[in-house]
Length: 288
Image (tube, rainbow, N blue to C red):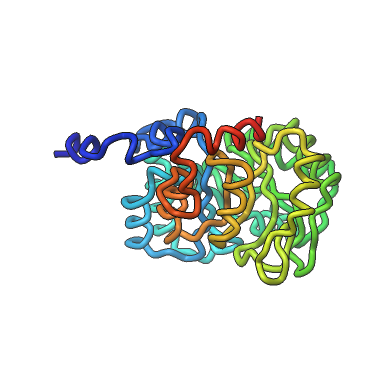
């Protein structure tokens, strides 16, 4: 019955784009294999319970790549529940990490060593290094990335401030991304908060500042190493239309994970053109 369930739909109907079906891998697939050749989807968990998280893994776990336990919610969660989430995510080959704000709090409280000890004891396999709320000098930022790697963790960094009205400086983003990636970061996330409104790439209505996006594309030599926080559907559509199905998107609400995957595959009207190779070839070449 399990094999029948997987094969009953024609492959071309499950993935009209022809680019994603191989990415919907089995639960025991390693993170490295899972990440190969597919745009990453990072979910933000702001307080899911056990059953809600289990439902997320059952319904969309094959189409999620990273779970972020949002901002500073990890130490406020029941340890048993946190361990359950970490175990379930890792069983499916996902990255799971506490939010970057928690590490910022650890820096402010001079508890960085204790932070890493807790992250490792709990079994997280990734961390986020950010300075959305505090000021973080370049030397310490690099040291935190390298400390994460020494502890066997994947490191995702974040560029941008959380203060309403903060903008993206394309040149500064390019410099930060280059140095973060050289230090060992896996991706560099462009800040948009969990609201996607009034911060970074998006204005106070959540619409993209397209001139800013164009500037980023000019300054950043490899936008394929950027992950764009895009919690709102129209933001996801714009970035998919700009970069193609392989764009990395973060801060996706758990309930939107499956819907986002349909857009990546051309199974929703917003990106229906992805179902025809000629329509998305230009976007793929743009990314390369």
